[in-house]
Length: 316
Image (cartoon, rainbow, N blue to C red):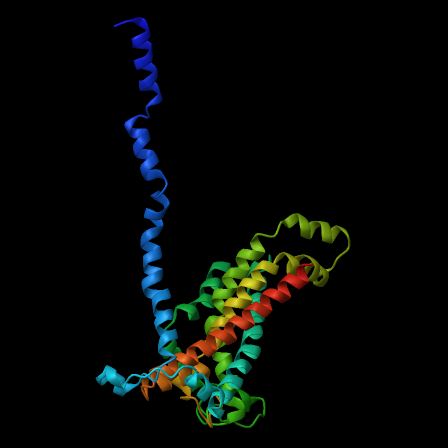
């Protein structure tokens, strides 16, 4: 074999990719999809597919008769949505839900921030113990908590009215008076959930550089000005996350009024999710319940977009 032939063969072998390199090229591109595939499949099967099925269901009159015989299922278009819009009880539930979001959301954020500031204070001792105590309601079973709070709110034997009587205040029928039922349940919801947001705020506070506080202190800023001009701006992303998640949680207000008042008295604690549950699992009007769910989704999405718009405007 001539020198030129050997050189040509060597050059050809050098230009040919090695088997390992070929395999890497073949499998390297879809490797990310192999890793993400199981998670994407779960999201599709248990999230996107049920949403699409619910949307189609909201355009039908699917009820208990359709469960027995699919021939009873009819496509009704937007009739369910028209029926919801003309339902006085739906608007009553919407007002109650918005009241819960408007009062419970800011109150929960304020209590969470206050607890986080208290625990992050240099004067606070036993921080781990207090953090555990404040977070304990979050991991406590809601039904058990609601039952206990029903006794606390008892009009004759509850500890709340007993404490008010020591201050000279007449007993209040917390669960039987339409004026007080929703505020009482909101207090329970705030107490139950503020510990989670407290942990988020604590993480945000710990990420603020101490040099900023030192510089503000050197410039003569007092505690309030340091809080307003250093803490609040640095916590802006945390405020957005906590505000959006808390608002969504209060839009889904269900377990507390369901266990404590069943939506009463006089529908004063009746929420949109309770109406959805009642239509779907009590009267088996699943098409109508699906339409209510998408109405609630639209309200939640609109409120979220408003918060994002306000955050963007304030950042300009």
